[in-house]
Image 1 (tube, rainbow, N blue to C red):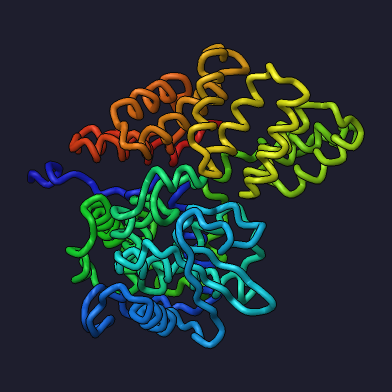
Image 2 (image 1 turned 135 degrees about the vertical axis):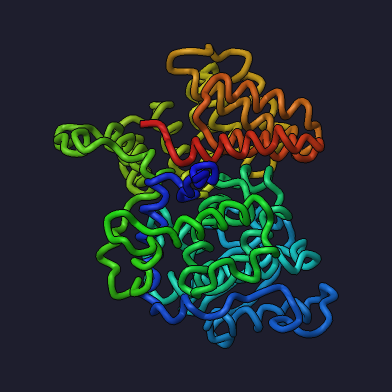
Length: 463
């Protein structure tokens, strides 16, 4: 009689994210086999990781071997190396991620996993990092992905979840440095790339595949993941009105029925795509500069660099071409080259505020915060809060807020994040950054509201 008081369950992610997650889940099942997805979850206990852990290098190597075993990666195929935060000598020239906690490379046919040494004291985060990097070995090292996919890092996280490491990925986010993650240029401000609700729905699918209903490991998850996961499980167990079967039944033969879950773009990637009418436009008469802009807008940064380089050959004094190529280099995480192009643009047009913004962003990514703050102050002082300059103004407030947050000046950081949101309200990473700052201040309700807004903005990017 009063059943309506209970309310209907719902999928914890928006339809576009649901389609992406289900499509990639089917692809993973097809690539690795549905039974791999039904292996038991790996948990942070002595059953899976016996022995004392003291954070020594030997302990880390032992832990790495255990994760390799559970991921199905031959330990003899992988070289494990260590580096310290900011030590670029440990990285190759193509790696602009001096602040990353983990890196994967294919070097002379061997997989190389590099781990930042501060991770040694956080075994939970360390296992999550190992799982992510070893998922790269399975995807890139075995040529299942090419490396230029727009959703490649998210698929890597998703594979780690489906191979049993979802609890580690979900909980390690709370221990990651949110602000450094955003400085690195990640869309999602966490140790991994999937948002809380994306992780939650992925884990709900895992629970269904294990026929567990509410899995015993649910109580190990952070509430921000556990609650939407339980909602997702409830939603999957309810009957679909069209089939009169539980919604989750369509996952039972996921690998076999992969075509029923077509691959679609992740909404955050689709934001950079042109509408179909624009994609059909004839580009044959466009010059190299315009072609470079098209490529950068579509997220094809390698192509953008090639076209803009040709444009610069035609006109070496075009400051805007250097600006745009610097942006493309940043998209490729080639930070030093981006900084060099920003400097060239500044030399050609010293008063161009856009060059200050791009150079400031490159300086933030390279860890030169004082110099970056000086450039960002110029952008904020001289940009108009409307028209073509509105995006760079919002970016400058956001980046200056990150610098202040890293220096623990949280009140000033929150003011900058708020100004960025007022200027351009649709960027989820700014809400995530402000949420982290509120969290550090102990303002958990405000932090939660901002995280919810970030999830909403991520699921509904601007057209």
